[in-house]
Length: 59
Image (cartoon, rainbow, N blue to C red; front, side):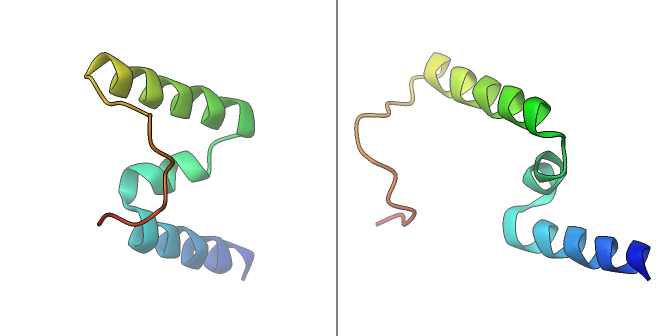
């Protein structure tokens, strides 16, 4: 039963966030933070600017 619930939770994360972020969401906290920091560093290297606050909605 527990395995089934974990699978349902994982499937929900895949539908809500995509495969990559679903995998990241289930990493241990320290590893997750390191992964997200690497994503941000990569974005900055590619020229993404973080001047504006993230509103969660693309206009």
